[in-house]
Amino acid sequence: MAVDIATDEYDQAAAHFANSRSGTVFGNPSKRGRANSRNHTSNSEFMTNLRNGFAFNLPMIVLGGLALLLYLSK
Image: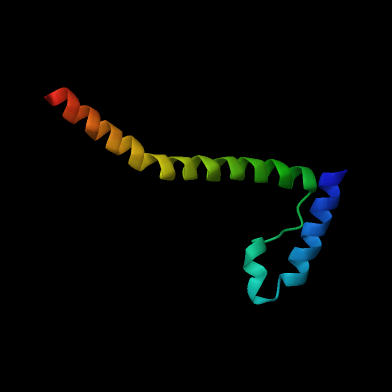
């Protein structure tokens, strides 16, 4: 029930700010069904988090790999 209330408030805020400068903060709201929207959002959110995880950790993995190669080459 709390999720439904929050979704309704989010939709109202997105509709209110849709024509203003800050309308892009809410993305592109569409009137899809809630169940379909939730499944798509969770899948999209997972992929976004996965990409962010690789982006944040890739430099550490590369530096660690280089350090390991230097250590093993001596």
